[in-house]
Length: 369
Image (cartoon, rainbow, N blue to C red; front, side, top):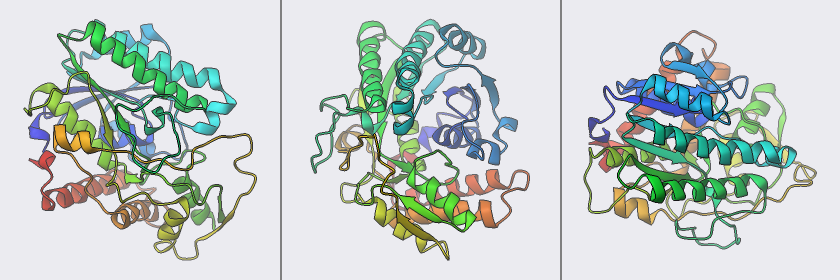
């Protein structure tokens, strides 16, 4: 898969202890890449990173993405071929509580990684992950395209828009002759191993495990929900194009790409909760009318992923129901199965990756070749 371009490659991942980063690190390691992760801490307890005991399978570096010297030093020490930058302050509520930290982590962190890439001659390709929240949200019903206005009202969204602008500037000013770089913007990812605060699926999993009712803040808000492996397949496939392992008619260097579900998959929070309840006996929910106090968060959000389809031949693989099933089964194994056993959640996570790849192969996704 991915034109077999990651086997034997040295891959540097920032934010490898986070939800998406740990799944990416596990997938790359399983494909034969030598993976080095850089993060300041494990952000939650429990965590997908610790549930898999991933520190035993990748090089685990500690450092603050806001510390440029530490980032550059780590990159030069590891000498990566490929970089995936995911480290960020990723929570909307926390961005209101600590706006300076959010801007420093997401803007300055991106700037530091760009500078590290610039100073590390071994790097051939780099993918910078921002967010679908980078767009100025006008509450319209059609999907945002990569050329739409950037920015947002809340500090998190604004910081991600800024990160995109900084990356674009570096691409055009310093990276015309290499390394090959691009940015990616993914819809709301769900899946096993996410325990972040103020996210509906982790909230549901915690409540179900404790025998409590989950508090729902915005039941009619819509999001482009997708399994965490969906955008990761897009990031990895884009990386293969940037490395030159996959040739196409379109230039990918210096571009931005959306990765999200099909246009007709745009379910509400209430629908996500109802779908999870089918897999978790006794699961209950109730409204939290005070949960949004002091926060402004958009209710309508869709992505247009036509560019990823046209340039990369990428599209989402799973249906909404399959996405929910993958997610529910992971938490069920963790809480009701053998999640505490050494290595069991790594084996289960790799099994889910294999099942996802098998589904993609059956649906003739180009990246499976």
